[in-house]
Structure formats: C-alpha cells, structure tokens
Image (cartoon, rainbow, N blue to C red; front, side):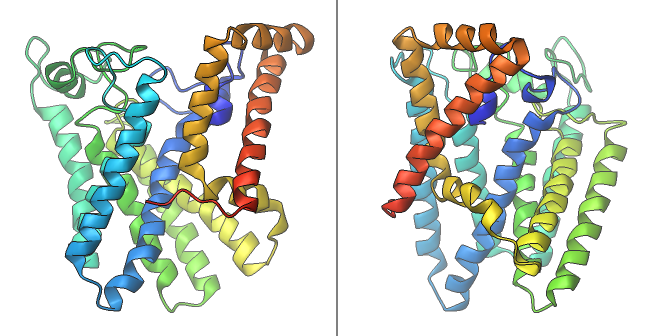
Length: 338
C-alpha cells in the first residue's frame, strides 16, 4: 500500500483499485493482511490457551490492542488537522482492529467446527442481507454505488464521517465488515492446518488444494454476487482467501521446505513493524503535501521518466525511504507492541 498510495494518477493499471466490480493487484493487499493476521492469531493465542491462560484476560488484551489500532486509524484519518464534525471514522486500521477483535472472540470461545460455521455464516448472511433486504427508494438486490444496503447503512450512521473520495459510502463501512471478518477467519483456519502434526509436504498439498477450491468458488459466486472490494462481497472474501492461501503455499514451499530465506529478508523487516510503517507512510505523505513538495517531486519524476514509469519511480522512492526507517527500527529491535 505504500507503493499504491503514492503512485498518483499516472500509475500503471494494476496499481489502481478496480473501478467497481472486479479486482486488480491493489485489491489483494488488504484482504491478504487480514488473512495473515488471522493466521498469526492462531499461533499467538493457541499456545497460551493450551497452557491454561485465562480466556477473559486474553479478550481484554485483544480489546486493548484493537482499541489502540482503531485510535491509530483515527489519528491517521485526521492528521494534521482534526475536524471532529467531518472526521472519517472508518478506515483501513479501524477495519483491521474490528476484524482482529471479533475473530479473536470466535477463536477463543468456539471449537474449530464452530469457527468454520461462523465463517460460512458471515459469508452467507452478508450475501442474504445485500440481495434480499430492500433499500428505501431502490428495492432489494441493488449492488451499484448508490442504492445498495451497505451504502444505505453507512448513510444512516456515518453521514459526514465517510471517505471523502466516495462521500455516499465508505469502502470500509459498517455492514461490509462482516465478510471481512470471514477473511480473517480463513487465515485462522489455515493456521490450524499449519499447527497440525501433518508432514510439511502434506500441509503444502492441502494448502494448494484448498486455495484452488476457494478460488473456484469465488469465481463461481462472482456470477451472482460480483467480486467487489468496495462492498467486500462474499465472493471477494472467498476468492481473496484462496489467492492468499495459494500465495502463502508458494512461500511455504520456498522458505520452509526448500530453505530459500535470504530473498524475503526485506519483507520480514517490513513485516516486523507493519502497522507502524503504514502509519509513518501516511504521515510522510501528508507532510510532503503540507510542505508543498509532493506535487513538484511527482511531476519531476513524471517529466523525466514518463507518465507510468515516473509514477512508479516516485512511489518506489517512498517504499525505499520507508524501508530505511523499518530497517533502523529492526536493527535496534524496536517493535510496536500493545
């Protein structure tokens, strides 16, 4: 997202979100993050639960962490000027916080079978709501920008506090958080597989098999409930979970089975402080705008390298600058903890 958020209007098509239905490379980033957060949750909580840790204390810890992440999102939404009457309440970090907390509750208090059922219920329940519940003045089943149930609920409860670029709905709105929780749950279910006693190659086979099944189901569901990141449709949730699973399986084969680890060290450094660097990226971009440097720097890159290439050079400069910050934090072993 550091690359995408700084690529500007001249960016290559994959670095833009899909206009509405469909998906691009950019649309994979957010669900991949939720998915891997769910997997990490399995490892972080399971050992504590198995050792007899109090579930109530774990819930309180999870709540504190979720509130901190949500507060970071509000900080980033308002920076540098905070106008409470129009401050955007939803956001990327806010959705991560809510999904993390709700998925943690399911993980801590439900059996694996119940976790599967909860995931399916989120997906089918959201599909039913979006296609069967009528919206005043539009009726049921509308899936366009205006007139869908997600947009209607956002307009009721978030009026004046939505994403300024969309205004009439929020891409991280209220109702679409339901299938986003399912995306996190898919990561948790994969975590159970990884923690099992199965041989590594058998785990790999199950990941590839399950991932491709989810990809097929997502594409099949797309025919009646289109893949759409803004609405976070159930087909989008399933398809992206499948894509994340196949991508992770490739990494598992390369890193854990083949032992090829050096190539991924930069990603590990970024991942050690993922949320901290994401917030820093937003702050740096806003500061460049405040100082009046962002537009001249971007235009200079475009003039030298051409439209799409200049856009990519400018965006990559942000990625490299922020990598230096992430590397410095990693070297000092300073990690954002809650």
